[in-house]
Length: 117
Image 1 (spheres, rainbow, N blue to C red):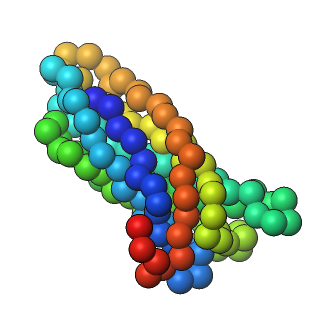
Image 2 (image 1 turned 90 degrees about the vertical axis):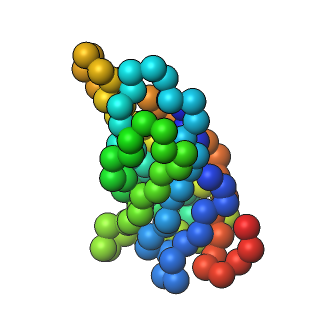
């Protein structure tokens, strides 16, 4: 199985949460399901790193997309529209074997709510 993170992604109204989505491609023989975790990171104009994380539900073999909600900690700085980086991992359950990890990262664009893709 391979996956990606969609871009652009949209922020919620106060920049504290991002709805993260991505395609799932090419499930391999024996792969039963996968769970995804994602971290979104951005360096703001003050040089502060803003980060949010989230974990998806489990998706069965044959699923074609995944989603997760990534949220910042309550007192953390907020995201703004602009460039960011997504770091993700999938834990893939394989028949007769321990789960295997699949890691990737991608440059993304964050957009304000209600803006066009």
